[in-house]
Length: 369
Image 1 (cartoon, one colour):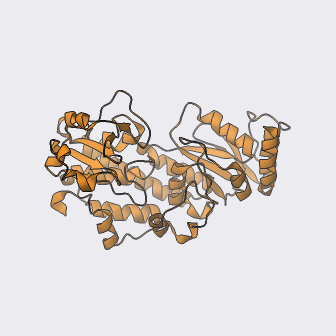
Image 2 (tube, rainbow, N blue to C red):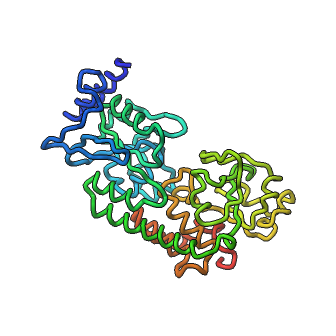
């Protein structure tokens, strides 16, 4: 293990005194990682969402995402500070975020379903901090401490839940010295969440639309109620996909067509790449109310799936779309309005009418097309 740490520390020499101190911890020659960091004139101590006190440079100019959720968040907050990506951007994403990301190094993800984080490449890119975002998990402190000690690079966690992205962006603004941008995104996220929550709260639970969110090659995977991937579906509708062991994976739970027929949802949304195009003419699906009545839609998928997979800040757009799809009379603005505002606010991108029309071609209330 110490030999591996030595290799990483050699690559991290460009980090200066802070990186060297972290590498010393990894080699066992410095005080234990549990000691409280001490700020100097060139550093500061930042307390992250896990209560971990992390010594950071006074001014941060180079950051690295820990994985896919952090990448999405950082692309909205400080794309110019990123030294690499967790996964390559496709052409649709590059159009939004800029072609400069085409040749960025890809590091992988450290805390996802699989750990493919290229630690040597990250050390060579010399970020001043690795940023992780998302839900707090039982072993989050231990895993992030271990990564920080191994790489000799500070690692900071910022919690990010659907209901409190306002706090997430305020924290990121403080962390990165971009309080104005952090406050702008904080106010936007808090406002759209509150607006959606209030509108849905005014609809009695007995009158909320019975829905199912289906995906997979045959449409036989469901995003189950209470799963981490179902936050938007559960918040906005009556999610009929109730199973014994709800999977937190983006692929959901495998179910049968017979089970979907028993649930018999009044409205179905399909993830991009599923059976949306063929399901209406497939006699096997004809007995399901949502399909026979034409009350099924496709989740918009650019720059990422709006509903989940991964469940991160993209859900704030999906939440606004889905609520207006189900309850258009509960809002004063349209799906088109909120999509344009989201793209402009979060990405700094002006979404043109043609682009928007293509993006929403299978995603609007049938009477609104």
